[in-house]
Each structure stands twice: as structure tokens, then as C-alpha cells.
Amino acid sequence: MSRSLNDAATRRSGLEKVLLGLGMFTGIAYLIVGVGGAIWPGHWDEAAASDQILWAVFLIVGGLLLLAGLRLLRHAPGRGATLVSIGAVLGALPIFWALLPLLLAIALVVLSVLYARRPVQSPRTAI
Image 1: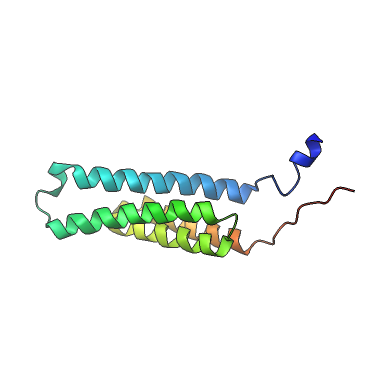
Image 2 (image 1 turned 90 degrees about the vertical axis):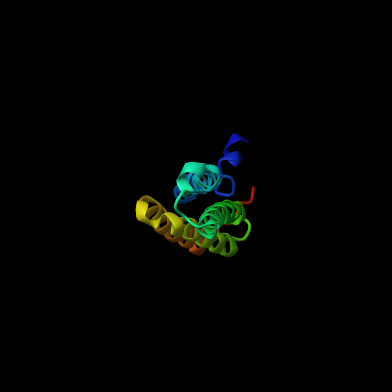
């Protein structure tokens, strides 16, 4: 009985664990940086209001798309990978100079495409 709980249908692969962990970290970081940066008054002294709005929108929407894509990965891998990729790149654009978001975005795009292209594992049937 306990063996059936550990079959391929319920077990998460290493690729999925890395993708979900890295994706959750990045998506939540985009949201925190987007909201925090938008409401931090001293950060925007010399910037136009349109810059502030675009910066916050790119980060917040990127984070939301990334997290939504992670949720879709198991049921619709192609759509999930698309949302993860768009969200990762969109969130990295306003803070590209930091280099780490760009590296995370590249890693998430590659991992999500690899995850979406993996062979589908069918659950084992009990005899």
C-alpha cells in the first residue's frame, strides 16, 4: 500500500523540484521588489512617474505570470512553461543591471521548456 504512494504519478522529479523552488523564489522576489520599490519614496526622486509605474508593473506582472505558470505546469506543461518564461523575462527587464535576475530568468526559461518537453509518465496500474 505504501509503495503505491511512491509511484511515478505522485513522485516529483528532481527537475520539477528545482523548477518549482527556483520559480517560487523568483516570483515572490519579483513581487516584493515590485511592490516595495513602487512605494519606497526616496527611490524615485529623480525618475519620472511613468518610469516608476512601468518598473512596478513589469515586476509585479512578471511575478504573477511566473507563479501562475508554475501552477499550470503539471496540468498543462506547454502553457505553464510559456507563462513561466514570459513572467521570468518580464520581471527581469526592469532590473537587468543586477545580473542575478537575468541569470534566474534564463535558468527558469530553460528548466520550464525542459519540463514541458519531458516524456509524460503514465501511472502504474495495479494488478
